[in-house]
Image (cartoon, rainbow, N blue to C red):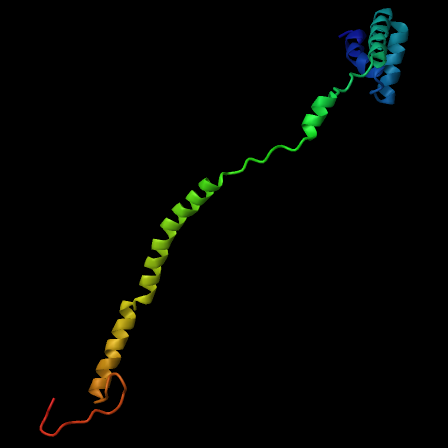
Length: 145
């Protein structure tokens, strides 16, 4: 591999001052001795100079009308009152029966509660007490259970 083949890929980085000090010295020495690489470096530096001279791309500017349109508040879309009321009516028609059913279920004693009441009533009767008040039962003469 010739020395030019090693140095040529470094010329662009050398022109942009991106090489280390050692690499820069090697490229500078080679360019001093080699007319072909010196011409290539001169071309690259010319291109770099032209790019630096180019004006920056202008920023896009908005016209006054575009600026006003961009800052104007957007109209708020409102839902018509009749549509809102219809939605409320539908939700209410679905929720009210469900709530009534839940309340009815909650007010009904559970099977466990009913069994406890029956057991308690039977215990009161066995103890010869009134199941509703707990008062002792009065036995009538001649009546047996």
